[in-house]
Length: 95
Image (tube, rainbow, N blue to C red):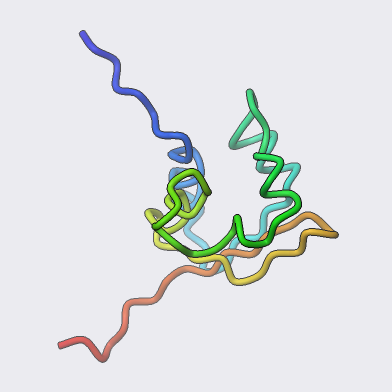
């Protein structure tokens, strides 16, 4: 039996999907402890706001984790070390 390999940011996706809130705030320490207990949040995420971009083009960054859960980054504060996610709302304009 082959064990399916977890993708790097699956824990982020899982956490956000199970949270159920319209807005989720996580500190960098919470990312370290809950989501990346073995490796910690990547150093780049702590110093470069671009790491938090809502962009599928760069899979090495975390966007897959939150976009796949239906969330987007609304605010990042590098100095105070937290990020705010908002749930993506489906548009009523699509027919």
